[in-house]
Image (tube, rainbow, N blue to C red; front, top):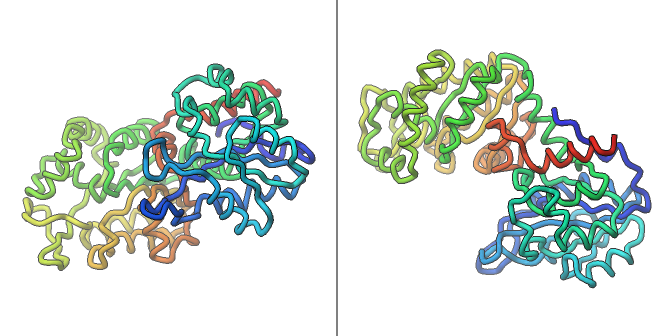
Length: 409
């Protein structure tokens, strides 16, 4: 597990604490209103609440959308939502590092909370650069001089070497916030000597990272089995030589996934007994579910789920597992007819004794819609950062915290 400092290592009373969170939320393109406060609530009820209650002067840095996109809006709404969540006043200033922001920071009293405006309104925020370069930016230079501590709680943005993620660690004592800490602890349970057997379930519609994740967890003996389903399962079946039929092959071709097939075949040849692919499938015929065997391929109908025999086989492996990573549902769970695979696998995980980590937006939506979220070991709200971590890549935000911890020691 990465070596970093946490809030437990600092006395924050009367200190100005810069907290980088991930408040990036879904926004209605017409009304510009936030339609889901999950991330704001997660940070608010943990790190921000704790810092405020411990008497810190809390200054929040966050981004929303990208310049030019419909969801690139100021953070005033976020501050109002946070105020409702915490049940106490939250200040907002429509400035990031100028005189208005600095004045608002200087006037903060212990326990008060201030949300600065969208950090991506600073043009150089999203530049991919090392911490030392970002430390010289106007953003870091102006704010670091007013602060006593930097807290990075934005695991979901930790895969980006952006100014507000890595720049402050050069000048300020730095710690991981509670969300960052929880994410990294949960991931260490499934990435560093996980309890065995360990299985990775790779499904969903986004299959472009499936080869790299599978290769990393198998080559490093992290996973005992990789179970494929969804579009990922389709891709692995194609790599085994199956023709899935026109609508399914066109989907893979459209998303430029077929080019991964040779690498997947090579990986399956290397690990013939550790990568599982569907043994039957569910297609949609005139709005109804129909299950077919692999021998009945190709099909003229879209494949929307795994079949009963695959469900039985995967469920058996889940019940024997001690560690499970679930990234992407096996079927189009939004359609009642094709929720069967997703429901069965989540129910098996809920009744097993394994530690389970759920990641990805569709996986979270699925487990929540089934009312099984509280039966899972940990649910990660991260997207790109989680995928990068599962592929064994170093996250710049985490590395910056590790380097800051070394300097303090």
